[in-house]
Amino acid sequence: MRILVVGAGAVGGYFGGRLIEKGEDVTFLVRERREQQLKEHGLKMDSVHGDFHCKPRTLRAEEKAEPFDAIILSTKAYHLKGAIESIHSFVGEHTMILPLLNGMSHMDDLIESFGEERVIGGLCFVESTLDESGKVIQSSPIHDLVFGERSGERTDRIVKLEEAFSGTKANFRLSHTIEQDMWHKYLFITTLSGVTSLFRAPIGPIREIGKGAAMIKGVLYEAAMIMRGLKAPLAEKIEDAQYDKINQMGYRMKSSLQRDMEKNLSVEADHLYGYLLKAAEAKGIEARELRLIYGNLKIYEIANK
Image (cartoon, rainbow, N blue to C red; front, top):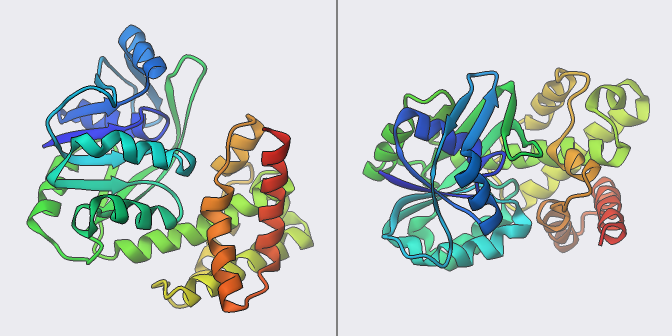
């Protein structure tokens, strides 16, 4: 199976690298600067699950190549439009497009651009980053990539993808409830990213103060209410389960959004929070907690223009 990974950053570089390590046919779609970096130094990964180094195949958007069997989108939401434009020539009749973005609004964009039949569901949980030299640093036991047909069916093509993903040093897992899994992650990320970016602190200190703990619970229940208004297939009492999960997280755990803010990088304010606030407005839901988080992120964006 020919696989194209869009982006060779902290997420795409990690999971793409694990597939190359196994022996799969993987190409990275990259920009000029990252391409040069990979040609000079290769793809290097430092991981708690084992280090890896290779010289990967790369491709630029303007170059020609045969359509790929699967395309893994590992970009941030603010790069989605460019990513969609860059992969058009590499999408064939039977290409599967597997997005790993947080949130849900990107699914509408992908389906509109490539059709219902080409877009499958996906998400990932991994704590990874790039250092100054472009090396992928993966530092926690969790390194999960979950995928599946949005219908939940076990189709021939998804079985082939499962075979390609199996046997790696990362945890690639086929799900028959991927739509629910994606919404559950969206709820979790909305809460964790929201409170850690608002308080500018790891989750531990936030839990210790009464207002912080109340904020965590408030965001969870508020976001879940909005999502249910959108007919999201959330599990019953998922709010309680996720609140318990957040209380069990390491004291110094930070969200990737918070880390991006610390580096003065772009954030996904509209993709994650603007989307939910539009839905809340349409449903007549006040969404106080989410508006506070969204306002904080928009002020950050203005200050970092």
